[in-house]
Image: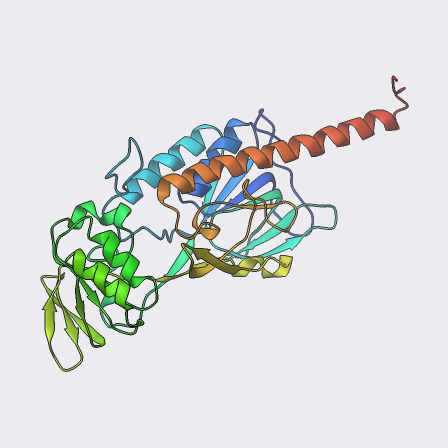
Length: 339
């Protein structure tokens, strides 16, 4: 494996075009932060980016110190420039399959028919938001249909905010969003009926509860104006909070035996993630994960930090391997071991 000390990538047999120390799958905050750290560690690193960022509908990234309000495409573009500055490489594409090579490392097949090989993998593919089945939600997702108060609460402060109940966490969501507006309505929809204590807490905070299933949204000029209930009644609403099911993009890892598992936050199941330890190391040796693919509820700043941490762990792992190999080579040449 070659670091970025002026050496070039190595041609491989088996149809792979290049061998990299690390291939990063995903070009969001986690992937680019990891790639930047690895490139600065003089590692040969390639980022494969599908160009489908989860936060594309959002107007700006929030809670990221120094970059608050930055449009997601601008933040990603700045990150790509920094990775390239240190010799990292970035290609558009989607990884369709991964296999372990007999001599170690991995071979990745891309959707354009090309292939690359890597000593280590950093998976930063993010997740897919599976929205409740209410017509019109997807069209307003990331603008007026929201899920994270710390990402979007300030932008909809003091507006009429609705919370769509689809599970047991809805009451907690409604009370949380009450921090940003005095006009919060909990729509029972398909969720469970609150208990007596929950009704008391909602009433104490002035949160209205509306029975009946939500059948659609009312809009004007492309913005949300109301929530339509079965029977035709419409309740004014300028922002609607939903609880998507989060699913990590991990299908291409199946051949390595790496599968997703359920993740629980605050006592409630939130979706399927790729399990990993604190460094991002997965159950498959040589594969790390960072960002929303493993931390389903993490924000952009947390994903960036996770990418840095995983990259540092990957570099340390490579150093250990390279040192072991160097010792074995010296011993093989007849070096006396001092005792």
